[in-house]
Length: 345
Image 1 (tube, rainbow, N blue to C red):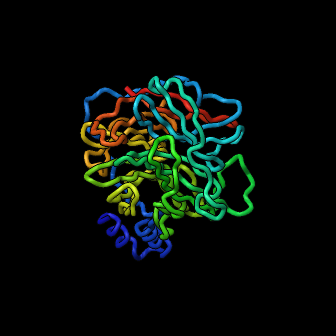
Image 2 (image 1 turned 90 degrees about the horizontal axis):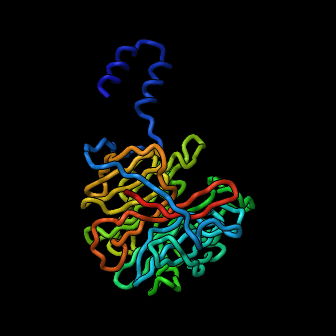
Image 3 (image 1 turned 30 degrees about the vertical axis):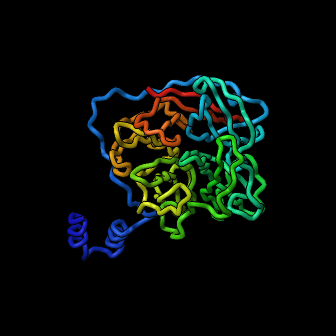
């Protein structure tokens, strides 16, 4: 900053346009770029590798497309996963409902059970679509977080996400006494909404909840994006977190984003801290406190898409501090979206 001030002083007598260019460079602020400086974390531990296997029951299917699954939990002898389902060939979650499946062999074979959550009332925040679910179990209650969409009137294009500035997304919550439901909406309002300040990083979209119980509070990691110069898109996505005293909220957002360029939000317990996968920047990051992240690994390829891990720490009263290292992710291309199993070693 001192260098720039000297530069302005030196050229003050030059043409005004040059000075104004420098001033604009210093003062320009867009979408609250207050992001933690993610540095390299010195580590000698082995690199995390990912391998993939096809699965049955919720894998490739000629009738339905499935995507954006939750983390996995175990209840009794069954593993549970929630995900977005759409009629083929629709692939965008903006036209989906939430279903669930169970497995008894650590995620290789699944049985699709039924719809877990349908659409809200037509005029509600989730009246057009419910997708990107995630789960948390606490004191006998199953908390299903999800993204709700209220669509722009007149949009009839079912093949692509509508990126109109008037679309509305928010994170909702449904609760059940059983993993098999029924899940009932906590109320008609979302638990987390886009920021009212147009300059905020999450003023256009928020979705993709990932949960953590830490320090007696519920941590809800999420992704958000804004519109800058009339443009927006997944590449503008940043990750942040909100906090509540209990899973039902109310949630208070952290001051600004934790990480720039993080499209999928995946977190897991590691070495007493929190690890996360940031797909756009192709990195795996780590924070002892869950906030100040550093790069643990640069992974240029083979990262899972929209993944969820088997996370025992999401189960009721489970104090497991480490993650077993397998989960479910999606594969997507035009006209096809399906789920696969992955291992993280």
